[in-house]
Amino acid sequence: MRFHLGILPNRAIPECGRLAGLAEEFGYAGFWVADSHSVFRDAYIVLGNAAIATQRILLAPGVTPTPTRHPAAIASAAASLQELSGGRLLLGLGVGDSAVRNLGLRPERLAAFERKLMTIRGLLRGESVHYEGQALRMPWARFDVPIIMACSGPKSLQLGGRLADGVLFQVGSDPAFVRYALDNIRAGAEAVGRRLEELRLIMRVACCVSEDRGEAREAVKGYAAVAAGTTFSTVSREYFDPDLHAALARFKAAYDYQEHGSSEARHGKLLTDRILDAIAIAGTPAEVIPRFQEIAALGVREFCWTAGMPQPEPFIREFATQVMPALRGAADG
Image (cartoon, rainbow, N blue to C red):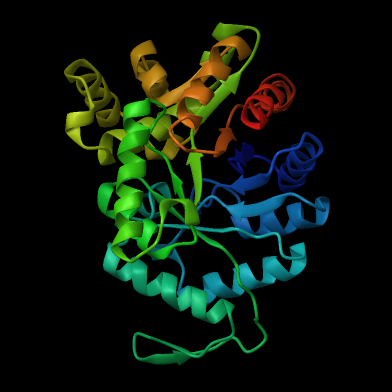
């Protein structure tokens, strides 16, 4: 089992670089940086600094929304990071959420997203491609950068299974929601003769661990609020019990994208224990470990949790020292 750390670059860029170094020191597999222009620092600048601050850890925008950048701009930034990091980039792409909504735009339609993904992949490899009637090429680029598609809705999960090198899926932490995601990814993969096992599957989950249970659950609310909105908007209604769906509807109606990811957002008060347990994995190590084991039994072997709290260092350390060894040992056994 492998664990990735995500951050929201809502802090100074050197501080983000320090967190990347801490993640590498504690054995995380990857370091993901949220990409939302109106809310955070520029993800690619943050990742460039992280590439210099680290030597081994994988680096990824988590994730770049295709409506806000031309495919050639995304490809150029990704190729530059791949060169700077010595081949450590995972290119996370998605249709857009806070980044597009705060600009008055709409998430990308999947047909347009597919064209952009294929254009970016070709440019990274140094191929000549055509996009919207224009011939494009980056002759200096010769990179096979894994493209990881961020997915939550059924059609996007199927497209990820059909097209991407891997899927970063965020559907909450309830095992029923995870099965929903895997079934759709598998359907997309098998439609083009691929097997689910050929894809890199990374589950993004709101998570926080502390010996103080109340502290962990309070600290996770900022990012859990992000994940709760995504789950409500994308997972099919039949996977919810009525009370949970109603609670999430009230929460979603009050969500403020200007406070996206903030642990101090006012909408966080609507995150009931029932919502939190369906969306996040938060509590003591003894509570958290079996929940990851339950999901791993479904076939998920990589996880990414986002440290969105104001002071993330103790939680990054606690997860790495108290949870990761136990789960790796269980997987090895």
